[in-house]
Image 1: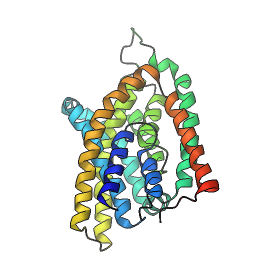
Image 2: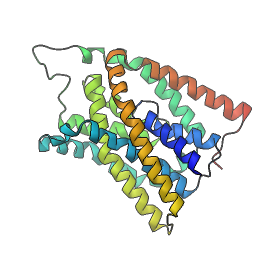
Image 3: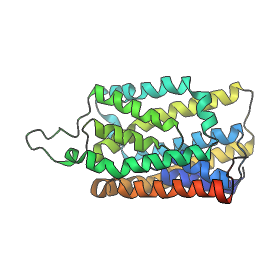
Image 4: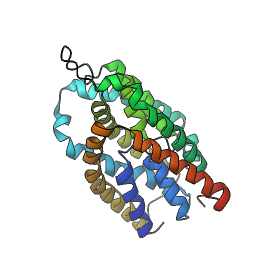
Amino acid sequence: MNYIEAIILAIIEGITEYLPISSTGHMIIASSFMKIASDDFTKLFTIVIQLGAILSVVVLYWKRFFQSLDFYFKLLVAFIPAVVLGLLLNDVIDDLLESPVVVAIALIIGGFILLKVDDWFKANEVYDEANPEAHTKISYAAALKIGFFQCLAMIPGTSRSGASIVGGMTQKLNRKTAAEFSFFLAVPTMFGATAKKLYDYYKAGFTLSSDQINYLIIGNVLAFIVALLAIKSFIDYLSKKGFKVFGYYRIVLGIALFIIHFFIYKLTIV
């Protein structure tokens, strides 16, 4: 990896982190095209720079993080499935991070789901005057179920935000509430993932060179700035238009990835 590649990956992360199109999947695709080595640092980089993008949520929604303790308890409940499954499946996830084909399959399947999700949960967008919190209040049971949905994103190409937003909608939340809770849930999830990845990296006997430290700093800063610009636009668009455009995008990208991989150029992270 060099500085230009680190900058490109960080920009991709900032743009895609909050869109239901898979930031990790896009970074795997970009890494493959740029022939970035699939070494331990590359895997570390693709996880750690997501923290920079996630921190934009803290800045944009800082007032929401000074709510009651109930808010934090619900985030904790939703976070637990990722902790348990992340520890159990760590090696499997690392292997999947090397496969553009896995990304392509996940993109296409997720795309078809997004094409239908607005129709499946149309009732969630109807304001109920008799019960104004019907589609905005999150219970502890709903938080736990959303946490399990988020775990689907351990498969590269699935999209953490997409999985958890859809999970929220299955709990009768409207698109805006489900998306915002997904963003809040990303904060402890990515702090945990970053801490675990750094711990494993050093436990394996690796150290960071000065260039690698610079890559991580630049990557996090750029991902943070780009995500700040992207997140509000996504919420506004999602509230008004829904998921269909993201579904079509995922399907087209997944098919294109298959065609490129099998018929034009065998994509590998070398």
